[in-house]
Length: 150
Image 1 (cartoon, rainbow, N blue to C red):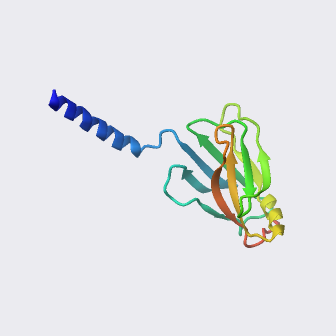
Image 2 (cartoon, helix red, strand yellow):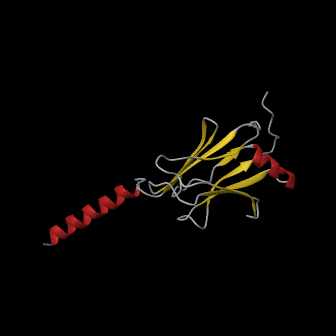
Image 3 (cartoon, rainbow, N blue to C red):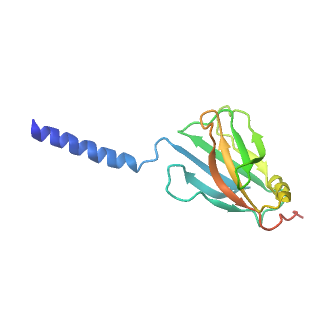
């Protein structure tokens, strides 16, 4: 009986260790500038929140954000741009996705318009019905002006 208990405890320990490395469940997201993926991030990650530079972006470029909530698409999705004190400067609301994962899209020039406040760094946040407190996705650097596409 004692050997069986030790074996079961050992098996449970091995299973717990293996599952701690899996990415089943949890939140993850990707951020794209047009067709180019800039960020792929898993929220339980110990890595620092990504920094995105829009120094080379043009006014017609678009940012695409895909956020995965435990294998599902969120409802009542919002993205917001915040300043360094976490004040909301701009917010976008997105329709609930029906079927396939629909990206949240906005133009890079909308962030440049916020540069008038004198700041070159902003924070991109995601919120939804499930993630009501908001999740910091990335910091965005707009040190150089966006260029017009010719």
